[in-house]
Image (cartoon, rainbow, N blue to C red):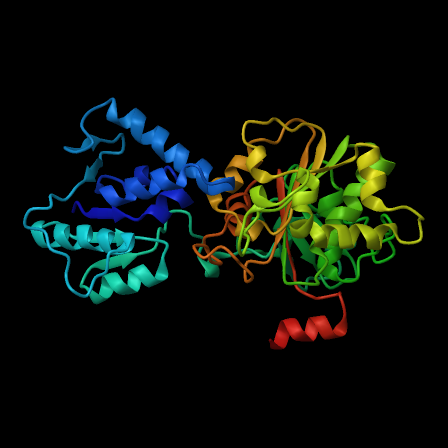
Length: 426
């Protein structure tokens, strides 16, 4: 049965191509949403870029017919931009004059005048509550959500016959698994060693990394950090996602191995570091100074880790690395349109990126570039993202069948006993 889906502005900003993801149903964009898109197009960073992309998509669609009467989409659906005439339209006394209220009014009118089931689709939790109170069925944008129950931690713990594990390579069929492992899944077989499943070898390969392995002065302190060491150090895995709470070592490990790869091995020409900017107040454009100086407040945790890694070396890490043109601090919005070859990229706090933004970043990766995404999906600053819909979890789940990627969930905090306990209790 065909349904009406009324889209809120934040859905289109979250995913500018969302209008194509409702199968053979009617996609309704209220005119106030177009007004909001227009107001957002000059915003800095990702919001402005998304708004401009929405404008380009709609401009191309209008060449195919009337946006007012409806344009047939390739998936069989219909896209309309609806407007309300002033005559005969009254705003209920309990609604104010905010743009959200106008969007509610559009959905309410469509629901009353149409025999087709009507849904308001919005990332705004409060708007969903208001819609339901008015009798309008409301839902989150679900297309790019990853269900928590389907989330993959990146490793498996098993107890198996000792005869099986007395080999450097173990055929996965001998483990009596319910299904074939995902590429680059890590295994703890409780024999004192750790393994990674190689899709190429169709076998579990014993890791060379151990608790005694030292890279740029850092040793792995727990099982998951050993897995992370292996994934970060392996040049045949160009995409690594590291997920974990504060103090689990995500950023420190990525930086340590990145520095080793750039300075010692000369495998990559440069270390590129960035993170999404979700400011509480003015954005980066209002701050004085160069890009590096503007980004400094947001990247201070990166600099803190660099100071730790360079302690005792008698050098200021940022000055040393930037002078040798080894460290590049990048604003994510500037990555659009670039091709980035031969670099070791670290995108910190990636849980604050949308799936669309993550796609934009990863599609910039050139030849011989490795990209590391780190973050904590339970510490999200973006009000329209959650555990199931942020870019970090989205990428780790979508790439779990690819041998180009590895994913590790770091469980144990190593910053300090107090920090670990605080993460558990608070």
